[in-house]
Amino acid sequence: MRKIITVGLGTLSALFTLTLFAGSAQAGGSQGEVSERQYRILLAQCRHADAPAVRTRCRASVRASYRVGRADPTLDCRTYSGVTVCGVLPLSEAERACIDDSVAGGLSYRRAEVECYVL
Image (cartoon, rainbow, N blue to C red; front, side, top):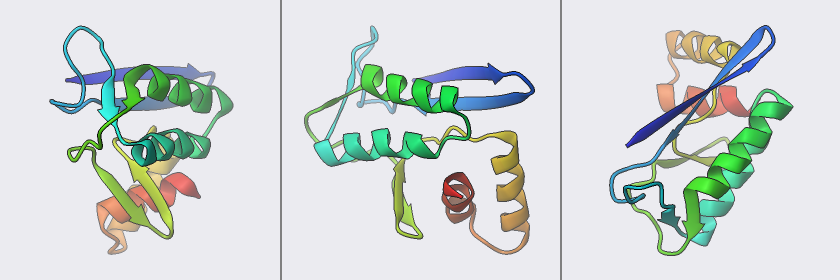
């Protein structure tokens, strides 16, 4: 199941996509179960979102969508440049442009995504 939340911030428009993988969340809006480490990563990665309102919404979405329990092996977590993120990141237009430039320069998409998100 995918939930897409669009957040408008004046002229800045940020797309926040939170992906709930099958098996992570039950139908009917219940929370997906993740390990304590995965939960901490999901919350911590919100600090890198481009705008305060997006950071706030990101944290609220994590708290509403996940609960600590068993690790979710289907949650897409990756580490680049010492930063670990999980799931789909809330990327701004500037971050998407950074990714396109980085990929054109030879960086893998996944690495460019993380590096452009945290810078």
